[in-house]
Structure formats: structure tokens, C-alpha cells
Amino acid sequence: MQVSVALRRNKKRHMIKHTALTDLHMALGAKMVPFAGFNMPVQYSGINDEHETVRNNVGVFDVSHMGEFILKGDHALDLVQKISSNDASKLHDGKVQYAYMPNEMGGIIDDFLVYRIDEKTYLLVVNASNIQKDWDWISQHNTFGVTLKNISDETSLLAVQGPKATEALTSLTEIDLPTMEYYTFAKGKFAGVENVLVSATGYTGAGGFEVYVANKDAKTVWGAIFEAGAPYGIKPIGLGARDTLRLEMGFCLYGNDIDDTTSPLEAGLGWVTKFSKDFVNAEGLKKQKETGPQHKLVGFEMVDRGIPRHGYTIVDADGHPIGHVTSGTQSPTLKKSIGLGYVPIAYAKEGTEIYIDIRNSNVKAVVVKPPFVK
Image 1 (cartoon, helix red, strand yellow):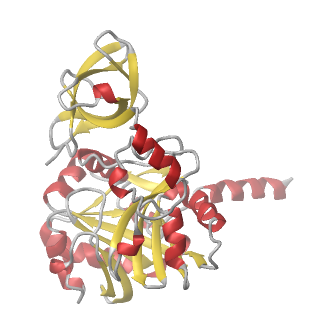
Image 2 (spheres, rainbow, N blue to C red):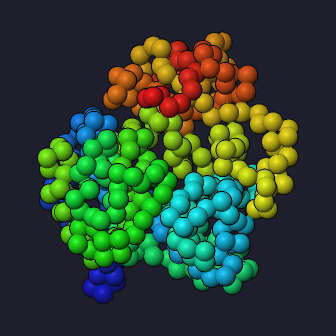
């Protein structure tokens, strides 16, 4: 009896994962919540304060819950090309590419980043909630003899974001951060730690870098970043502000705005859908493009008071349901409510009035083109 109780407790304790920095977040007073199977900080000083810190100065997110896969071998590019919507043959060493993995049914397995380390080595960065699903999908399509390695559990990822990120980090590395172009990366010594990957990427639209480091070095790097960033007003930032920041830019969130059932073309991902090469369900997506999508993911701003939330119904002027909200929030920068949602093409034009059913009241909104914050 005692053994089974202990096993149950042990199992419960292991159901939720922790990053290498969980203890540190708790010591800093972060509000912790379960997210994608991980115990993650949702906020420290408050979402609005953290949001403004990133927009105006510099903040640090622990996003170590994200997944990282290494693909290595003579045919690594062939495997990437097969599962990716984008054309990875355009990459050179040190370049990053945004893409998605289409499924056979016209939906999206995941959206992800492709890093070309060298001609035979690629790093894929995937969403935390999809790590196992993506791993299984890529493995299933690995008919090329490519060596796959899942390094998610041994890798920490810090996103240092904001207009002062470059100034804050320059003293920590010999990597030339000021000249690093958007969506490129370099490896080098960072905060005294060897072989750190630093990329000019992020999910906030505020500029900055993402720093990939081994778990054992995560606390050292975190500490060095905060010491170097102190003169620039650096603060730890939680997932709450990460969501409001990405939504102000109109960036899709997997599980909300895109998923296994949503069309990438309706979601506005045609720009990373390259029919110049073969990939999973290329023919199906090509037909959909020729026919023309029936719906479109649009941005909207509330005209009347009310906050749109995920799952709320979008209706026309007569109250007939026409779509649904996928993401919505009160924008800390604009001081007004904004959202994303799928509507029929007839309602997708900029300036079109739509209504959001908020607690049985049809609240007026207008379609706008993201990003909401220019």
C-alpha cells in the first residue's frame, strides 16, 4: 500500500516538467502556471509592466520549454524539405527560416524554425506542446537515413527582447551582435560559456536575441545577462506578456490561431508555402490555392468596449455567426482591445465591421491589417 501511494505521488510529481531555471523564477516571486506540460512563469511584476519593459527597454523570457531537434547526415536537407512548407535550400550557414509542417489533411502539424548549422546539419526549433508529435512525424518521414537527435531536455533557451537588448548583451560576447541581421545566428563564447548559439530572432516584434545554452550553464548565463542589463532596466518577463507582445504583432500562436485543422493558406502562411519543391500535401495545398481559400485569419480592433477572448463567436450585423475569435486581449501599447479570428472572405477586407458576441452582447469591431503596433 505504502509503495503504491509513493509511486502515485512520484508519478504526479513527474507529470509536470521544470526548466533549469524554475527554482530561480520562484525565488524571484514569479506566478507559476502549468503550460504545455511545464511549470512556467506567467508573470513577475505584472503583465502590463513587463510588456512595456520589452517594448521600451529589455526583458528576458525563459522559453526553455521549446523543443530542439538536430538533423544530421548527407540527406538532412532532403528530410527538412519533405516535412517543411518553406524552401530550406535557400538557407546558408548561419541563416534561420520560419516554416510550418503540413499534415495530409490540409492542416498544420506545427510551425517551427529551421537553423542551418552547416550543409549536413540542421536545428529545428518546435513548440513545447508539440515536441512528441513533431518528433514522431519527422521520424515517420525519415526515409533518408538522417540521424535525428532530440536535445530538448538538455537545452535551455533565453529570449532577450527589446530595443536595448543589443546594448545589454554586447559586453558578454565576441559575437558581433550589432551587425547581426534578423533571422541569422552565430555560435561562440557567451558570458564565459563556450559554444552558445545566439540568434537574432524572437516572438515580440521588439527586436533582440534568443540564446541557446546547455541546462548546466543556464543559471550562469541568466545571471550574467541580468548583471550586464542592469543599467538598461532589464527585468524577467513571463508568458503573459509574451502573449500580449506577440498578439500586437499579429503573430500566430499554435493551438489558438493555427492547429491540425486550420488551413495554412487561410492563416496567411502562403508566404512560407513554396511550391517550387515537393513536400507533404503540396498537391492538396496547391489545389486549395487555385480554388482560393473560403475563410481568412484577420486582425480586428474593438470599436466598442469589450475584450474578445479565444473561442468567442464572431457575428455579422444581423447577429448571424460567421466565425470565431482565435486570440484576443487588451493591448497594453494601444490601450484598446485587439484580436485575431477566422471569417469568410467576404468579411476579411480592411475596414469591414464585424461584431464579437461577448456575454450575449454583440460588440462592434473593425477588421484591420496586423501588425496592430507598427
